[in-house]
Image (cartoon, rainbow, N blue to C red):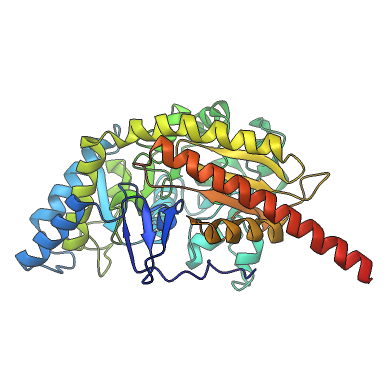
Length: 424
């Protein structure tokens, strides 16, 4: 039960399914890694890619192009006021790096060189680049950095499971304990839901956080890389909280296919740097832009946001029933819409059980249900994120397979533990 992804060589994928060269088929509950919101290989997206390739413009750096302008306008229309400026990039981590730069520049502009503190959350994941990992909340992923930035601090995330205290007072108390002066905070950045464990904060907490940021002139940044474009049953995941951030970082489901990401934000923040001073080699690649435009149209035309909400009303209760059936091993189920995580624990508490989580995932894959390797706290969460067009029948089929896999994995796990005890 290795720690890497299941050893399946993907050959092609279509709609809800993945295939290998031998003709084996899997129902996909990974969406790659929450990318294929519109389904694998959607015909309209493939046609848009072909059309752009045949047109002949495959790269244009930061020179203007019609396809890029159309995409920027489409994203701005879909974002709430006043978030009407868009900067296109390539990966989710890149958007978080951009947000860090904008946040600190904003802080110094309005508050001088001391207003540079960025607050994020324990167990957060914002990418694998230097800045993204420094604002991340997973200590083992930061060991290689050695010299961490003292002005990037983390506070507990109020998930209600590992952090029982969900009051906003915990946020303020944690900052005080770390010697952070609120007036020196330039930004608070949070995932809409914590990616590894699909954990949401209480709406009241985030609303209080919005007021706190306003009070201290700190930017509120939502990392929507996993959450945007309908995944949670709302177009933007932060809509669940009833707030509007100052910056949005998004990617993954923006194309349902090719690498593209975006930072969307307030004009006064996005215009801190003049045109041409924040660039990236493949920013707004025209082929990726074509895929993104087609994807946004598919999400709208096929009503995938509301469909995700409706299918979530089937998926989430079914997963909670699994928790009731296996209470000693599923500590809780977190998620909304078509994203969820089973928090796998050792009996008698909330200590994570990564080995059992791996066994569950591998059993699922053996039975034809595609999942990626366990993620989240101590890599002990089984993550579920099917393409948004999934049907009720496919959800029921997947849950049945998952139930079998959990039962078999628990039996194997218990037998191995008993054997280990007997030999010692």
